[in-house]
Image (cartoon, rainbow, N blue to C red; front, side):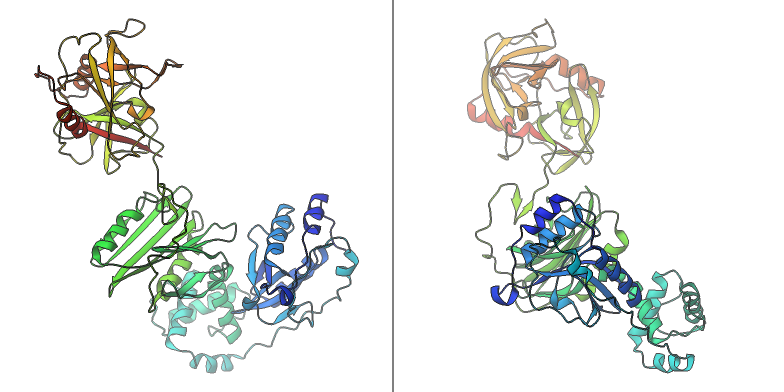
Length: 583
């Protein structure tokens, strides 16, 4: 008897409209729920699902595997069926949409043929007796296996590559640890016997045809589970094995052909295809490393006319490789969830070994109607820091002072997004941090700290990355010095009549002569949000003490005359740096 699902499921499924493939011209699709290397096991599971669900079918998948599917449906109906049955836990979470051209001979129900029309899901659960009327199938008998003599004769017909493949499969299963040479010597025979014994066969050391198939199906199970098959993208000019049971084509946005996830696995594939030269190739190498799909942790290799990028983090592992040949750059990116390393390695290896260039290359004008966004590169999200603040250079080696909030709980701190930095000292009371670049820098300008008290109501200029780096250069904001102490009488602070943004925090505050009289502090202090036109700065003397605690000596300002606006802008731009905190 078919199990009765929740009222929500019934309403959702019955609301779907029937679709007939031949009448509508739509391709029929299926929901694949399981696959087994044994026909008998597949029949038993098909019987189990038929007792609980309607429209259960079974088909050979090739390579000795047998799949259990629901359908056929119109594509939109299949998505709803997949969603509802997953929600009710009636089918495995890794079930996915598949297509008729991936199904071979039917084995369930017994005597069935492949339906050529899509089923209607209207009333799917309203008539349990209809599904229950399916005749009880009788499992087909397993074919008789070969004798040892027949197995040896069959073995002699194997190619060298087929013999090596068997050794590779035995090695992957943990039974063989010698060289992959295709020679069936004592080590290989022993491994075969151990595999036979572990799988319940007679340990003869010679695999029969069925046993060889079972061994290879076992080895290829990770590939079969994601529908690995050869795919040809004519526009990109690339042909290769791809996990087409887990991804499908989405769009062209040069230089990428996007294949997005179609299952809970979350895998994605990008095909890389563009005309260019070595400069284009290495430009792509740099751009790829700014994208979220290439996490920061992982090896990078650039040499000659090719590059490889591997990134691990944020729940994914990505592998990118591309090369230049005859004025065409082609390659691919595989994005896979972390924690599924064995299957990822098999899929990646199959993609690498099968990668084939064809005549065409992706048209750079393809996908011209794609959505434009400054945070996207060819449809891919640019990696962004958790927050960015301003800072400024205080010595000729590139040491920077900034606000403490710019380096709190960061896994990585950068200067101008390109240079790694380490925290040398933090003054928690003042809220100031000192950073040292991991590789010494040569700044264009270095801050000169003012001496003595500045004049009240004098004009001041703030240099900072007001919009956290979006503009690519610091902005200047003008105001006046309102007080030489804080609201609570703090002598290390100055109060400014100036409207600043969050990204300005950490930026240098200049007097009219170009000396740095302080560093802007965050707009919120002691849990209080200040009015828009009120800001505070740590004054020059307080910054001297912070630098001294870090083992550094501040450079004093000796200028007395006012700077021209152009000279002040040049000095501010040369010393102000974007400080970014990355997760």
